[in-house]
Length: 220
Image (cartoon, rainbow, N blue to C red; front, side, top):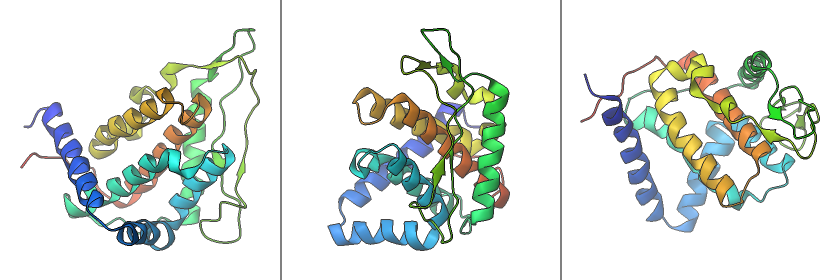
């Protein structure tokens, strides 16, 4: 049986190869790949992602790496595992949001406030629109916290989330979290958005788990 680091290497190698492949595309080809994914293949998931970006008032260019990794996750299932997840429906996304929010509710306060005012967990962006993937009609419910509060770093511990015990969701979460940490350190996102994008990843893999089996990653 392959060691965890060997299975992780399969994923990192795939993302590196995908980055090289996309880097060799013309601009119109690259735009076409993301447009097809966001508007035709997974409009609900991309709509939720864009709603989070819009809510935090961040330019999409600052989080393009997250969009790339989202597409990369689906391509890994298709190209390396020979699995083809279907288009995720609005109902599935909303159900997954409720499940993720319920997990965070159980974790308790999400911040350590310097003024001693712990708040409850933030609730992820909830889609509430008439059309598929509509970010304009999305809304975000947040239990307000003090501006001096800091996120509890243990909230993103993979051991808190059973879905990450699955092979690909668990391994890929390290790549996703590494991306978020990098964006935070360079100032592209703040801690609130980092947490929302981590929760977004949990929503994505929760939806995927309904359609794809828990397949072991094996090195070539």
